[in-house]
Amino acid sequence: MAWVLILGGTREARMLAELLTSVPGLDVTTSLVGRTREPALPEGAVRTGGFGGAVGLADYLRAENIALVADATHPFAGQISRNAVTACDTAGVPYVRLERPAWTPRPGDDWQRVAGIQAAADVLESGATALVTVGRQELAPFFARGDLRCVARMIEPPEIAVPGNCKIILARPPFTEEQERTLFYAEDISVLVTKNSGGTATATKLEAARNAGLPVIMVERPALPDAETASDAETLADVIAARLG
Ligand code: NAP
Image (cartoon, rainbow, N blue to C red; front, side, top):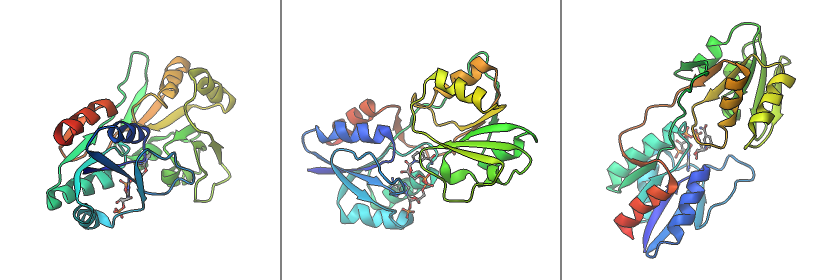
């Protein structure tokens, strides 16, 4: 059997695991970092926790006799992707990546693109009411802005203290466009802050912003090393099956 290591933490990674476990000759382990309290578990084996950087991951690949690494992590999980490319080079293991297409602006969109989270917090105007949808790990720069109101939406609560001018909304996508617009009006939102995650699960907020004439601060993705990529789980599963199956 050839073992495939899927670097996971996304819906696409679970889809990939499901597809690959049905390919004869392949076994699959999905790696999760273990921060989510109740993660949706994929088919096949699961391991949890960091590897200890690129060196630790290279050691793991050799020790587990991994035949191929399929990086299906979130587009903003740049560190693990960079580590994986280095580790695969070191261990002589093929690396392929599932790269979910980024969102692109449509007519009627009012986007300001920024290079990172800090830049997104910096460009917010004083007095704004920002709906911040960047995940619970990256809220500090927004919480530091005492001159505006921050409504931060996420799945699980943040680990840092929430200042008095900020509000937390706990909710799990998907949301309809109507739900998103209702939230904008209920919270008197003047600007939406989002990472360019791509995909369909959270794209309705962009549609709602367009329909409500709301500006969007769009945090662009980190650059990743060149690699063979596919834009969806089915295509990547076919690539892997052709190589190893
Ligand atoms: P990151 O900054 O790229 O990685 C930080 C460290 O976390 C890595 O160096 C690695 O530790 C460990 N790590 C990350 N992903 C791992 C995985 N799948 N398996 C084992 N170790 C992993 O990652 P992040 O942005 O914090 O994201 C962490 C996880 O959440 C990823 O699996 C990602 O797919 C998922 N996720 C992230 C986002 C996001 O917006 N960033 C959104 C949804 C889901 P060591 O160096 O010790 O190996």
